[in-house]
Image (tube, rainbow, N blue to C red; front, top):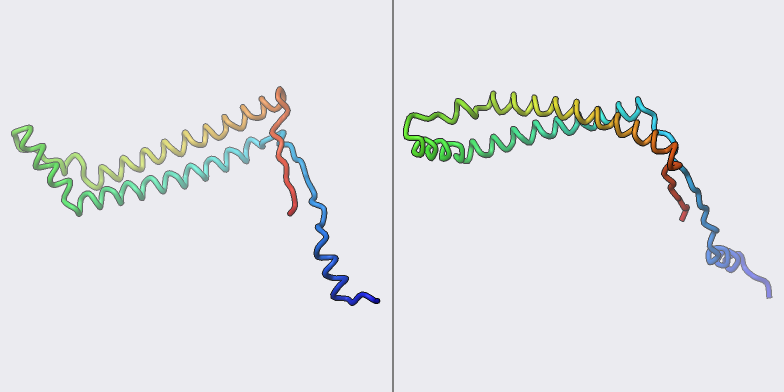
Amino acid sequence: MSETVADQLARKVKRKAPSKQVRLKLVYVDFWSAVKFSFVASLCWAIVLIVATLLVYAVLSLSGVLGQVDALLGDVVGKDFDLGSLIGLPQVLAFAIVVGLLNTIVGTALGAIGALIYNLLVRALGGFQLGFTSN
């Protein structure tokens, strides 16, 4: 009895292809690439921080929470107290921008320090090994 082409194809499909495995070792992190990556990541985080701060301020302002806190502090202090002069939109925006800039500087420095420390530790420990398979 002769086999049909469909039977031969069915047998081929049932056999699994051998999975290939690759083992890679990370032995060096380029310093300037790490600095550039950490700068961009910190800059994105700073933008998210500024936008989130403005959104929280807008929600608190529009919902009347800041007005109620202003009235409560006026009752507690007992004199004419204006919370709006301390926590206005320009002050909140300036504070968020300053914190974002500091975050960008510190994040970039931490990325650079992390790359330097990893490159020093690789010499002693041998690197980070990863395994990949194809399925």
